[in-house]
Amino acid sequence: MKQSKETRQVFSREYYWSNSYKTKMDIKDVYLDWQRLSDRQADNSYPFKGVVTTDEYKWGESKDATLGEDGKYCYFKPSQSLFNILDLSFHGDFEFKNSKGEIVCIDPSGREEGLSCLLVRKDILFEAMEKENLELVWTIIGEKMITHPINRGPRLSFSGCCFFNEKDNIENRLSFEYW
Image (cartoon, rainbow, N blue to C red):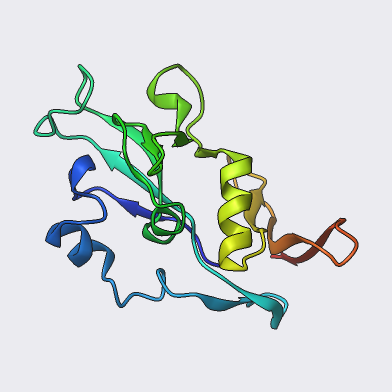
């Protein structure tokens, strides 16, 4: 399963347009391409293609004027693909608006205490998906590990996806590996 890419070496406002962003993200990278989703653990593929929709932005330098007082933060931004599909532009540091001036994406952790996540307006997302003939798929990747002071316990890795089936019910396909 594909995962968000973490970026530490590009200033926040250099995203999407600058040479440093394009070099760091490597536009030829499979990360930006629509690819058939597959699960290495289950050795299968799914009946659709997907693309990563978020980038994890991290910065720990005081050289970026958009940072807070401590000079460090982390938040999610829309990926280049989602940025283009929704026709977005920057609106502050943690918000993105569309061509109508509507706030479409926001990471609320930039304004208040809490976990970092990218929230997207459902109505605008679904409208863009319908226009582009796209469907919503959630990829799931995780690991559970039991730790012990003397030795490492067993691990459980899991991956898969959830999607809407023909009857508009959420269907999931997950695989698990114990080791």
